[in-house]
Each structure stands twice: as structure tokens, then as C-alpha cells.
Image 1: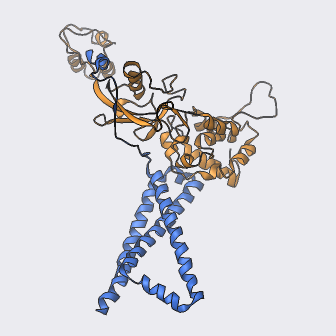
Image 2: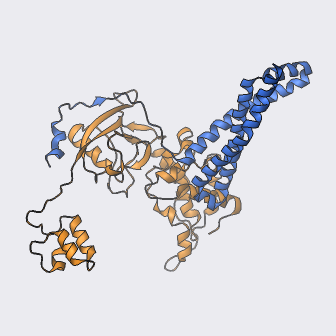
Image 3: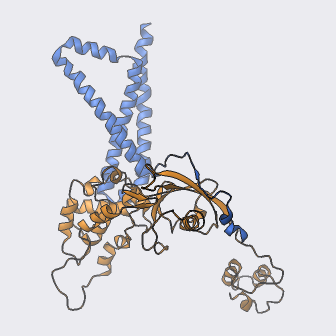
Length: 145
Length: 286
């Protein structure tokens, strides 16, 4: 029983200052799916901006267009395409999930399960896409040498 | 309480022996008697005292007259597993630092005064038990997010209540019944979940949309609109739907389900918001 009153006799009455800076809100699947949706959405927006511009180059001159397209044909851009397709697939699948959650009571109740179904589908689609794509990206270089 | 009466011959038997000799006749009484101290203690019986243990509580303090920025301050308090975070704050305020400011009133999860962010989640301090936390690590306590910080754990709740008032949270009916307005069990059940709201703001301040867009009505206002929109006695459902069918209304909801997780009353907040959305698209289904 004596322990309970021990805080009265703490040696240091002035509280210590900590270097801790802040906490992140600890949301569940719903919050992280929203975060992923935002990040992929913004990323896809910037890609589309560039994509519209480089495609519009063909109206300026076909040579300029071809020159730009040639700079895209390297492994770094190939890997970038994997990321891009991943972002689009995730955004698309999660977008369908959000529509269901809004419109269908069953989905509202089982949103957590749906999140993991979305993740599974994205993983499956990417497992299908990535090897085929990377073979295309890397084979011309290997073949050329 | 009834253990000695049930066994008939209490004598020198300990409670454990009594349970064995009795077999299955009245296990419930013996079990409950063993748990508490509400029975005469046998001679020489060891009594297990609940042990208190040190817990580090790190509170985000802010005194507008002194601090430019909120700062994290840590306190060591002796706690029992069955106590609540509110008790820890009391102990800090009463025994260590009387300047700590926080709201609380009933301290039993009904008034909704002491919503705060505990270890990164919005909880009522009076309903968050110490035993549910990993006390080998510090427990972080800070004010709820998205409302103007006034002092320590106190925020200005006015913007929150403004949104609440805006959705007209009162029964609107033109007729005047003789005695009372009748409602079937099913009609009452339709909005039962949203009647539980205590306006603690845990849901609204857990919403990432509300953090960045203070104009958003927020989950709590929509929950209270839901309570009247789906009430068969109310006649102003369409008015409330029009209010919420706004740029800053229900369509701001991004279904992060933080509000459902934060609600200390267990209201399915995001589900209620989804039902309001559906009512806008396909009409109110009572």
C-alpha cells in the first residue's frame, strides 16, 4: 500500500523534458488504404501530366516525339513502369472497393476483409505482369550485345 | 459471499478445498467468492494484494502563455492494472503537477468530456484501462487533433458543436399527437445505433479529412443527423439531407473507418455515414 503514495516523495518534482516529437494516428486498414489511394492518385496524376505532354509532342514533330520515346527505352524507365502499373492497379482495385463500401451495406461491414482481397488481387496481378514486362525490358539490351 | 453458507461446514476448509468437496453442485458461488474479499477469510490464508507498478505517461503539454509550441513532458506514476488513464492524469495533477489541464466530468464514459489521443488513438481517458496498454513502454497522451488547442489536453470544441447545431439535431414534426408519437420496434431499431452518441468528438477528430479540412461537418454531426433522418416521427429528413449534400458534407467522407474505431460507444459511424450517402442517392428507407 505504501507504493501508492510514493509519487508524493519523487526526488525530482520538475518533470523531465523528452525529445519525442509526435505520434502518428494509428488507424487500421481503412486509413492505410486511404493513404495508399492518395499517394497513388497523386503519383498517377503527375504521370498523366507528363504523358499528355510527351504524346502531344507528335503534333509538334514526329522526330521530337521519337527522340523522347527513345530516352524512355532504358531499364530505369522499365522499372518505373512496374511501379506505375502497380500504382494504377492498386488505385483501380481500391477505387472499386471504396464504391462498394459506400453503396453496399455488406461491404461497409466487411471493409477490412475487402482491403485484404484488394491487396491479394494487386499482388496476383503484379506477379503476372512484372516477369513478362521485365523480360521485355531487359531482353533487347541483352540481345543487342 | 455465500461460500461459507453453501458448504455448510466451513470449519478449517480453505475455499479451494471447499470447491473440491462440493464438486459441481454450486461452482458459481465458490468461484465468485474466491475472486473477491467479500467473504470471511480463513485463518492463515494468503491474501493476494493487487500490486501497483510504475507507468510512464508522456503528456503533450501546451501553455499558451509560456509555450510557442506544445512540448512532450513525461511523468512516472504508480498505477494498478484496473485503473484508467484518467486516474493517471489525476495522479499527475493532484500529486505532481497541478498545472496540468484536462477536461473530465462524470469519469464514467457518459458525459464525453475526456476524449483524448492515447498512444495514437482517440479514446476516452475514463474508459482506457491501464491493463490494456503495454506498460513496459510509455503511454503517450495528447489532445484530440483538428480542433484549436487551448491548453494541454483541452481543445476549443466550438467548431465541433457548430457543425452539430447546423444539422438541426432536434425532432421536427408538424402534427401534435394526443398522448405520444407511436413507433414500432423496427422503426425505433432503424436509428438505435446513432442515439448512443455522447458528443465526445473522438470520431470527428480521428478523421484525416477533418484534420486538413476544418469545414467538413465531420462524423459526429452526420451521426446525429442520421439519428433524425431515419426517425419515422421526424419530418425534416430532406432538410438535413440537403444540408449534408454539400461540398463539405457526407461526400467528403473517404471511408477510413477511423471514426468507427475511435467511437467509445461502439457506434458504427462509417456505416451511418454510408447510409446517409445511400439515402441521398436512393431516398430514405426507414
